[in-house]
Length: 620
Image (cartoon, rainbow, N blue to C red; front, side):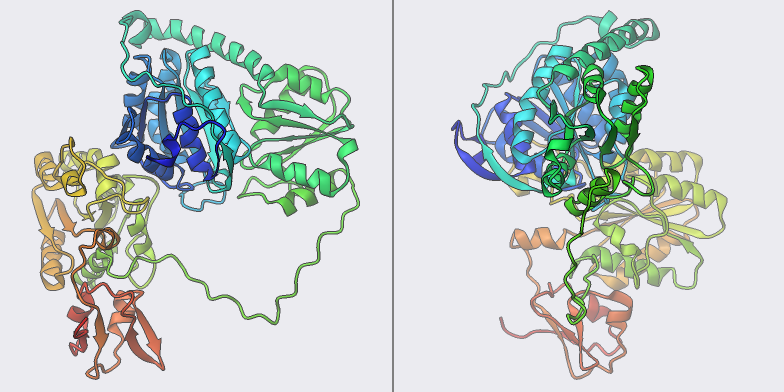
């Protein structure tokens, strides 16, 4: 049995924050879950991977949806049928789901619906650092934010209860530091899930034509007022201490503040407002907190969400206390905080004597060599980028790319990535570049991303007769986030029954793309010829580069090639390193060598070596 399914109240276990969240959802009686995998902190990937496994051992229904908007729409239907439902995504995924989210706030839910948004301060694996608390303000939906790992488990049940009490979805906001922290978790009892519901028809409350939506908007505003009262009563919004100095904190910053107050020995001079139910902000509790404060410091990663709200509440009440947070000499809107930073800023703001710990002198220790992110040894994407570069040698090109591990192709020497803004943008921006510029446009998109949001752009390109080549990197999995399935995956080969399969080639041909070719990236000569032909085509052309992800193939024990070595024929031209840069290569005394433990036997390097000096290792 999956460890998170054990019905053993009181049992203690060390869990990742992501695992604790998944356990909390099970304890809360969640019956239905949807996602599109994303990696802000691997939150939506790891949480969902647990759900995927648990679904085969429990009554839970779980699906990987084609994108976040679809995931939320599927979840909205389940929640409006009375089922406790969860929808999991990374922070930028909420942008994709926002069209459904804004109006779902009007419609509401009958069963609890928790939408997890995993924010990514410092952008460990994301293209921006947006603060999704503003989605609560924009949509009028409640937001809750846990502080530590076991609280993430506890708060999940609170979020489901709150959702059902208000008849609204609840946003459950986490950040990287919580998702990937490990902490002790005490299991609670598992509530038996209701797995079959009933949708009660009420079109004049559920079909959002303008006349209905006007009525629903009134309901939403009334609900916000109810939610504000609940926020003031929430056990996750608390005041501790009774000193004249006020500190307000949320999320992981609560831990940093607690440590700093203790380390600076100012416990008797500080009162702390911890905000865990952060939208709507608890106005009456904030006024109680501000009463008697000489000055207030707001400690929150990201944007000044609480700072702006608390200042507005204070101004409306005629309170003139100094409230600071984001400022050049205080906290930044950039990146993550840490205990040392928070301690130093609290000491500076409240004029507390503080000697920062002396940094250890590391001047006599050589720097650790940096290992930049890199495509894996044997990755078929590396071969495709090389082949595109060869096929377009001498041309003026623009190469839009997309979200996935193949984004790393923008790095030299492959240098295959000139523009990127969001999932699916490679196709849409290719249309714009092809119309606005004279350079030849060749764009890249992964198979999962193509299903997620690449198809509408391609339809647009065919309809408007744009001129570019789209290379679909089909490695038959969602590789970057941990090998989750997508609609093009053969689930039977992974021993999962009951799924369909969508052919990328059939979709592309069905859209009406006039020039379609399929290549095997490990066959370099034929691939270059096919790409050259596609690039020469006037109009939209698509090249589908089909080769299973080498890491997935390795995990499934499907790799059959032998590693290669550099023979004495090598004249040290270094084409293999300078043009391909596979991480299995290294230099030893200026000579090229291949690490047999990294080499996967893809044989791409053997095909580009001018002396044919790279040969397979003999024997085992």
